[in-house]
Image (cartoon, rainbow, N blue to C red; front, side, top):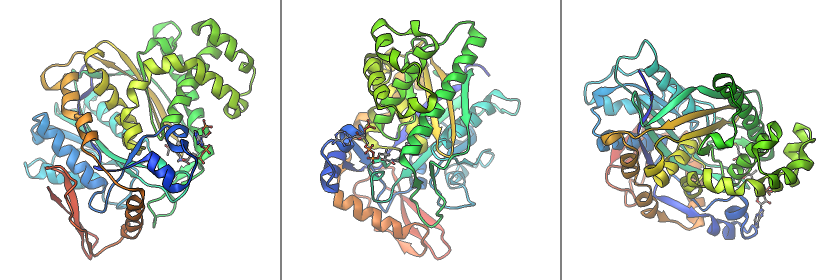
Amino acid sequence: AKNVGILAIDIYFPPACAQQAALETHDGVSKGKYTIGLGQDCMSFCTEVEDVISMSLTVVTSLLEKYEIDPKQIGRLEVGSETVIDKSKSIKTFLMQIFEKYGNTDIEGVDSTNACYGGTAALFNCVNWVESNSWDGRYGLVVCTDSAVYAEGPARPTGGAAAIAMLIGPDAPISFESKLRGSHMSHAYDFYKPNLASEYPVVDGKLSQTCYLMALDSCYKHLCHKYEKFEGKQFSLSDAEYFVFHSPYNKLVQKSFARLFFDDFLRNASSVDEVAREKLGPFATLSGDESYQSRDLEKASQQVAKPLYDEKVQPTTLIPKQVGNMYTASLYAAFASLIHNKHSTLAGNRVILFSYGSGLTATMFSLRFQDGEGPFSLSNIARVMNVDGKLKSRHEVHPEEFIETLKLMEHRYGAKEFVTSKNDSLLSPGTFYLTEVDSMYRRFYATK
Ligand code: ACO
């Protein structure tokens, strides 16, 4: 199979959302802390009738319908998620309800889990399957689904929730440049979920930022090395039109792109302009560790990288700023933002993606856009996703209500024998929602 990659995408996020500015006031922090300090505008969250299973049921059903894909045509289904509802039964098996109805139970794949990286592992599995000898000619389907919620404190405004589905096959409008990849994997306790009775992670915020940036540097180094090996010339930021980052909050994305700019300067000072060389010069002799701690370097590199950031990164930031961290779906929601904003001009462009999952696992990889055909064209993907429509039809709730919801969910997590309010008033037609968890912990869903 040639040009294997992403044929179609759909995205779902819950309609309930809280404005970051309202959260600042409510939490009594200084004005601008979440909106400018973290760079976030708004945060979507699951109410008691939604969870990662309902969101993934919704997004898969919607993708199959809107692109008119026969469910029998799916041969592999992979799910990435770090929201544990069951330690044994995969989310994938819940999604099989959609396919069993059509007599298709011949579908490989299960769930992949490592913090925000599970979606990328799922995506690579599907792409590798289509490129392999075991491929049977049918489509792969990747689902990233997560609800990011944090305990009270500075991490809480970096929550979010969404599910994304991506159809994988040959002759794709978005194809993998499979040789152009770099990974960095190591052992760290930056963000993890050791308490199985709670949905909340244990997080060392500062350490997680440094781990993220160190993994970014390392992946970029490997990717540049491979590019040089295969292309016989140096890679720099000018070799890709867009850069998409896993987006826990926008400020980290700004810092990440600035870091890549600094990496270019260190590797080959002539790849950046005169002004940038002058501004970054004083930092050239810092050790790796010193460079992660230097506030002055952070400021200087963000400043010189700003024009390129506006061109190569800003178009990818819409959904993550509006919806928040969606864990496994965050990187792909940023990617979806790019298609939403630029679908008519992307053909021929290269985009570099950086996936990061705490603990830690990270990969930087490259995709190419082509003019797709019919349902699998970039403009149709943008039309189907209907990002503006979905953002506009959300329902803003007061911070008090958001916090009440989180409290209720703390009790519901891991619980049995309850029925939900079944209140579907905010949901659009076709959305799945949770109705009941019975005495055997079995979960039941209905569709609006
Ligand atoms: N106006 C403008 N900016 C402000 C204001 C204000 N009023 N107040 C603070 N800020 C800025 C700070 O200067 C800082 O910016 P800087 O990083 O450029 O210096 C920023 O807001 C954050 O403030 P801090 O006090 O440094 O950090 P805080 O205690 O708010 O915690 C953190 C932020 C660590 C990101 C926290 O939200 C967290 O732990 N989140 C979860 C972990 C996470 O997402 N890690 C990322 C990778 S791992 C993953 O994807 C889950």
